Image (cartoon, rainbow, N blue to C red):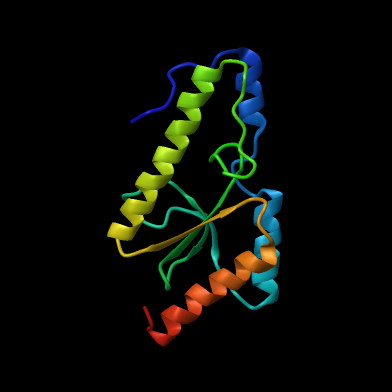
Length: 143
C-alpha cells in the first residue's frame, strides 16, 4: 500500500522526525490512571509477531491492544485538519495512515485480538473505564 514517495521539503522532514511516536502526554495520562487502578500492561509492543505495528498499550493475556491515535495523523473527525501547503502529498500520507490502521485492526482481529483505538483528546478516565470494561468482559467470559 505504501504512502507518499517523497517528503515535500527538508523542513517538513525535520518536523515529522520531531513528532513523538510513543510516550505522548495522552499515553502517559492513560498509563498513570491504569497503574493507579492496579492494572499492568506492556508499553509500545508488537501484539503479534506477524503484524508489523506496535500498540501503545498491550494486555497480552487478555489479547487487547490499545492505540492512542493523534488527531492530525489519524484524521480525527473532530480535530483532524487538512494542510493547505503540499495538500496532495499530505492527503496521500494521511490516507495511508488511516488505511494502515484499518489493516492492522483486521490483522489483529484475525489473530484473535481485540483492538481499542482512542483519540489523544479523549478523557484518560473514560478511556481507562473502557479498557476496564473490556478486561472485565474477558474475565467473566462474556462476549
